[in-house]
Length: 102
Image (cartoon, rainbow, N blue to C red; front, side):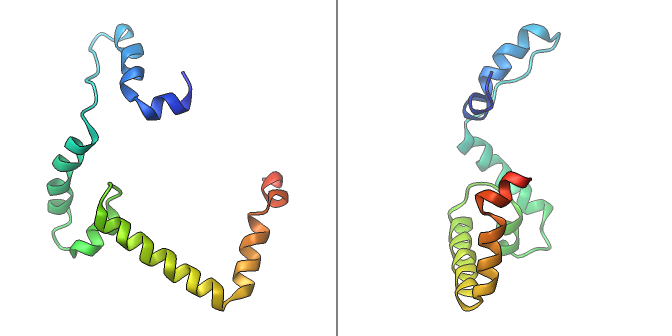
């Protein structure tokens, strides 16, 4: 089984594992169900934090999180445009030649 297959449908992994186990693994729930269940739990665990901080910390799909990501991307792009040396260093470090050395 390939990595791509496991991340697209983890239930296929469970199908292969369950015959080998004495106690079968449960199948996954739909993503929207998991998210709906987890939001109140994540919020309760972080009651002392603002909603914005919780959104930053909890890596679950969320439209507010998408808005924050766009703001961060814009901020980084603004910084890089006013600091060309930082952009040059990033380009050097992520060039194919540099990545082949890793």
